[in-house]
Image: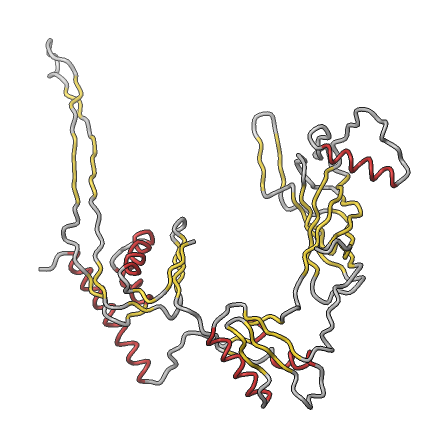
Length: 385
């Protein structure tokens, strides 16, 4: 008669054997072995030079309902108010004890998309700098947005949309989201474009989003087969150079438009990503496990107290009621645990399914995977987040 633990190990072996049989049937039927799907070239690469540019600016938000900066705690806000009013013809330099809590100093950020033209609108993000409590109902004053070169590329202004809120009472308060940060949809107008002459270029580099030798080679081969000429060449694992061939009448941008619709099957490295804090395990399709034996067990000691009351007999003149201790100690050494043999070339999915059948949780499974890697039996890289 088998013990329950032995039955579970036997079930694990049967699961691995069943997966091996299914894999043999798939190979016999000629089904594709690769688990990756072909993707469009535009989803795998980005064109070098075609990118966004970060913009930043400093401004003031007005119209707040008493939730702005405290001027004595944020002197830069007072200086900004005085400078703004001076530009509007109001002199407040000699004013003493300026008090206003309806204004907040903010940092405004935005991403300038590639090929943005003057007059286009972009979204902006507004975040407080001082001790302002809430930006709801606020309006951003005209704020120039600067690039890394110090030039003004956009100007932002408009009412702020805030997703969070805060409510405070005498004995309690509640805050949901972040009320000190908001967004202005289409809140900035582009004033200057970033020069980039794509039409006159004779060659361009395609940058892989996930660098890989095999994927870069497949991209170059797919482009050359589609064009019918050696116009693409792999430079390194992250770059494929595309050259405009002689006799091609259309500009290079037309060639990029044509090749980005081609489909390529990317090759992914064998990797296991582990988040130890939440117990999440993400594995790649190419992960393999060599022959290894696994056993998992812990020493568990349970101590429970169930005290009972002892009373004298009814109508007795002698005796007192006392509480008698009663302690129950259980020790589980899991001596019935057995080694589970994992055969060679078993996929990580088969291993995880077998461990799940044994009732092993994510935390123990992470430790087992790390132990298999330390033993050299896990043919993959482990990345711990």
